[in-house]
Length: 593
Image (cartoon, rainbow, N blue to C red; front, side, top):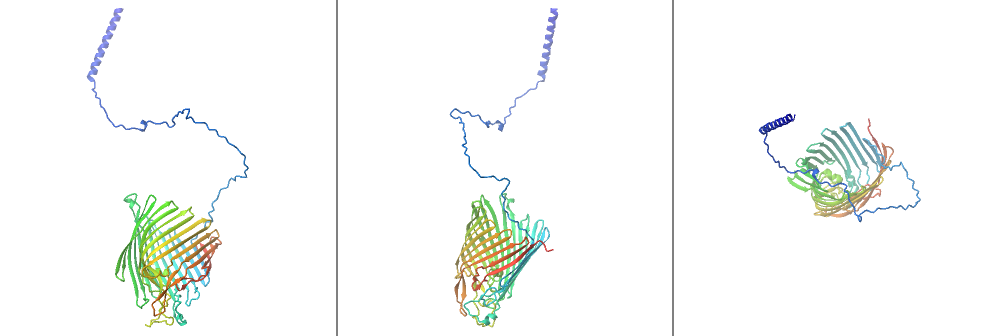
């Protein structure tokens, strides 16, 4: 038994040794050789690798630094109180009654000295994209100035027609303006004794006719932002005529396409032609003509550097005087810099500008309707106007604007009386030509001079009282003349105090005008050519207007002008109308159909 067990053990060991040998030989024959490859890379840290500080670190205090516990005690004393809180009530803001808006209105009135008044506006919308409107205004005053040998009757008639159309990428409008304004040369010289026969022979009436056809178009998403054009014609009862063509195109170039921080560049181009003909010269019987062609280019660029706002621009004109075969080129600055010292409260500004103004017969007649139809029309060259000032608001109720400027102007216009061709007894000259209604020293001529002008202007307004707004402004002018002795009929000081009051039913307004002393010419009786300088007194004029709304559609109004009944002279020898009162009715409505 032992022998069998030993043989079995010996046999098992031999089998195991044989199997290990074969397995070892097989692995040795099929083994794959390996090599070590070292990969080197840069270390990229991660947030997770950083050492984090605990958000709530545990701080251990020593005995000396331990916080002491605080104890609070309330000393209560009873106080008698009568305050009873009221709940459920909210403070309301009084916005007032919102005024109803109407598309049309009709107003009629009548004043003293036979002064009828009529005004109407009618608007008709054909669709949401188009509309047509008509505005008519008429005012007549029959011989309102007292103690004048000649009639002072005047009337103004204005008619405006307008059609507007909204397109997909643009909107445009076109219209017609027509006016007829009648005045009289009633201001005869006081140093000439005119006989009754001479006065009765004077034809003092003058009337201006004006017609204008115009059009405007605005573009969306285009390099052309706006284009305007007009053709106007002016005439009078003495065969004077004036033809004016005026147009401008405003371009907008988005410089942000070149660099994203740049703003838009605006370039305004203008073109105009003026042709004026007067039937007579004041001194001779020869015809007087004027003709100007002007082309202008006005680039403007605005930008901001933090709070500093800057406008950089210029104005350039090329002008042709066709009657005298002259041409000129003008360049002017157009720069302004503003900076808010205190935002919304105080904004200082400084800048310089200039411009070229072609004087027309209509523009001069609008300033002084008593000019003679014998004007010498020149171009006023405003070489530069340097200015500086401060403006702002206080508590959104009080606003102010103060400005000082210094200008150099060539051919500044002033109005001076013409010398009378009559000595008071005759109505015709030695050349057998009868005098016109403006030849008796009762009309004005335009005198030009090169000046330096220093101006101070200030204006304040207050809107902090319920339903009431008040304000005042004033201006002081200092003229430095080259040839003329005085700035004829131009005030050195002028100002205004104004206010408005409005409730649901009542409305009122008041104006207080002040105009300082002026200087005028007074010629000696013919044949002398000498003149003396006369002083025109300063004047203060008070005007009031008000009314009452019976309903949203009907209201009455009352206008009171020259309440002090002052017979002052706006231009020398031309006294104004005294106290004037006019009352009337206004009707507002949506449609008449």
